[in-house]
Amino acid sequence: MISVEKITFRYEKHLPLFQDFSWQVERGHTWVIIGPSGCGKSTMLYLLAGLQRPEVGKILINGQPVTGPRPQTGLILQDYGLLPWSTVRDNIQLGLNLRSFYGPDGKHAPAGALPVKSQPAVEHWLQRLGISAIAGKFPGQISGGQRQRTAIARTLVLEPDLLLMDEPFASLDTPTREDLHQLVRAISTERTLTTVLVTHTIDEALFLGEMILVLKNGINQTPLIFENPFTGQLTPHASQDYQRLTGRIREELKGTLA
Amino acid sequence: MKKRLPILWATLGLLAVWQICAMLVNRDILPSPWTVLVAFFTDITGELGKHFLASFWRVLASLILSIALAAPAGLILGQSKNLNRIFSPIIYLLFPIPKVVLVPIVMLFLGINDLSKIVMIFLILFFQILVLVRDQAASIRPELVYSVRSLGAGRRGLFRFVYLPASLPAILTAVRQSIGTAVAVLYIVELIATTRGLGYYIYLYGTTLYDYPKMYAGVVAMSLLGLGLYFAADWLHRVLCPWQFQGEKEPA
Image (cartoon, rainbow over all chains, first blue to last red; front, side, top):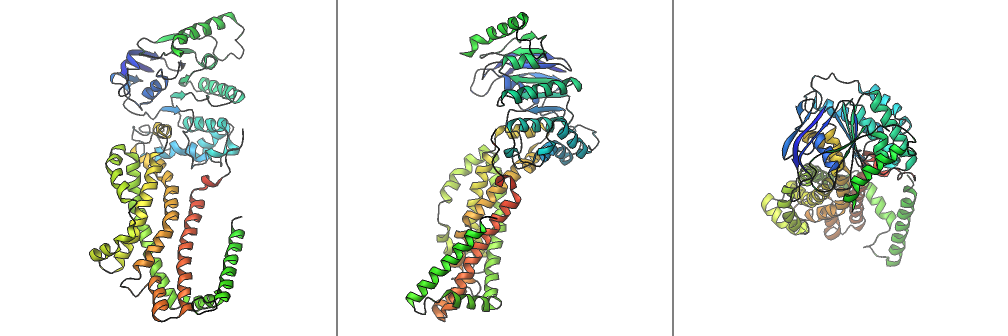
C-alpha cells in the first residue's frame, strides 16, 4: 500500500530528520509511529499526506508516486483542523463541498467519482460517531472529544482508503481517549482501512498499532519496527510479554528523550 | 437583544442633558432638543432628506469600493509572506498618515465632483480594512490549512472555504472601527465646493442663514448616518458570523 523508498528530508537549515530511509506498510494494517518530540513523526505523516515532499527518494501509495494531497488519503490532526465558522454538520460536509467545487478531476477529488449523495452520508457519520445531537453547534461550543469525533467523521465521509492521524487524542482526558481508541479500532477493522497513527504514549501505541515504528531524535536511517500482538486488548498490562515489549520500546526511546 | 434597553436609557439621558444645557444657556445658538427634532422631522422629507441621501451615497460608494479592493489585497498579502515583506513597509508608512490632509491634493487631481469625495473616504477605509484582513489571513493556523488541503483543497478551494470566511469578521470590524472617521472626513469634503450633502447643509444653515434649529437637524442627521452605518456593520457581524457570538465552550 505505502512504500517509502530511500527518502531524505530536512527542514531548511536543519539536520536531516530522515536519510536514505525506507519503510513499507501493507494494506489494511494499522501502524503506530512513536517517538519523542522533534523526531520527525509528524513530518513522516505530512510526507505520506503529500503536504511535504522528500528532498531525495520517493513515496509510493498503491504504486503511484505521491506528489501532493491525494483524495483517498484522510488526515486527522490533534486540534485546530475544524473550521471555527462552520457548524459540526457543515464541517463534516466540507470535503464533499470541496469535491463538488472542483468536480472529479482526479487531483482534488477522485477521478470519475459520481457526485456523492452527501446528505445521507453526512447523517450516517453523525450518527455513527454519536454527534447528531450537536450537529448544529460550532467547534468553539463543543468538547475536545466531540471536536475529534467531528474531525474523524469529516474524513470518513470521503471514504478514504488510508487514514493518517497525528496525535489525535493527545489533548483529551482518559475516558474520552479510551472511548475514541475503541471507536478507531472498530472503524479501521470494519472498513479495512490502512491506518498510520502518530503518538508519544506507549500504551496508546500498543492498544491501536498492529505494527509499531519507533523514530528517534537525530537522523533516522533504518526503521526500528516492533510487531505488537496486544492490539485491541483492554488489560494486557499484567502479562509479562506486554511488559517486556513496553520495556524494549521504552529502552529504545530512552536515549533520545533527554 | 439585551443591549437595547441600556442604549435607550442612554439616549434619553443625553437628550435630558441637552435640554438642561439649552435651558441654562437660553440663547438661539443652543435650541432645545424638541425644537431640533421638530425641524429634523419637518425637513427630512424635503431638503434635509435630499442632502442626507447625497451623503449616504458617498459613504456607501466608498464602503463598497474599499471592501472590493482592500479585502482581496489583504487576503493576498496575508497568504504570501514574500509579497507581504515587500508591501508591509509601504503600508506601515502610509497607514498612520491622517488621510484628511490629502483633501486638497485629491481635489486638485480628481476635481470637485463626487468622485474626489468618494476617493477621500475610500482612502481611510481602504487601509483599515487592508491591515485587519491581512493580519486575520496571516493568523490562520497552518494546521487548519493542512487539514483543509488534505480534504482536497487547492489554492482556489482554500480561498473560497478558508480565507474568505475567515476575513469576513475582519472586514466588518474594520468598517465599524473606521466609520466614525469616514463620516468626519465626509463632513470636511462636503464643506468644499459643493451644494449637496449634509456638510454643506450644516454649514449653510449655521453660518449663512443662521437657522440654528435646521443646523442642529443637520448635525443630528449626520450623527444618525454614522450611527446607522455602525449599527448596520454590528448587525451584519452578528448575522454573518454567528460563531463569534455563541457562548464559549462549555466547561469540561
